[in-house]
Image (cartoon, rainbow, N blue to C red):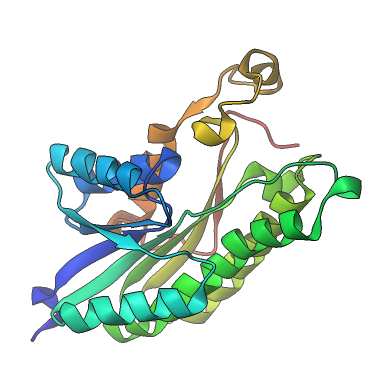
Length: 249
């Protein structure tokens, strides 16, 4: 079958809550993709995301795997492709991430590894499993969710800053490898965004550090991701786009 007739999908890892959910909703509104909403354990939250995707006029399905588990990632994606022969995943949003904050001198090996595994190895496991198909397809959009921490470093987040900084380096390198095939690779670096992940932070105190004097909304990040996932962004690749209300260092 001609590739134009293939059913087109966008995969969002960690799509059940926060920024991931907002991205799924925005892609459903803006672009003609069926959403693959990845989640690890919280099926109820993933179902909520699916409901809001459908309410936005889109379609989607749930896809369970832990991005850290390379075998699981490969087998789930392979099984999906076997079931959906006339389909292509064109957009990959690597959004899954965890934080295990604490001062480096007290940081356990487990807290270091878990954060690196989820953000950095998760990026590798998912993107590596799909990259060949994107190249054969001669079109694709890879968007990696990083953080202001990966650019300037955040005290108490040495593990998270290391993981996100590494993904930024990987973004810039991979972008150069695949650009000739119309596959773009970009990173989005949010600052303080209102989500479950930041709900325990002292917003009143921290927003004083932000020139815009407020935390961002997940929907604001999702608009940027949606643009990068669209054909309009075809000449932007290898970029890290800050969305942080003016905090740079």
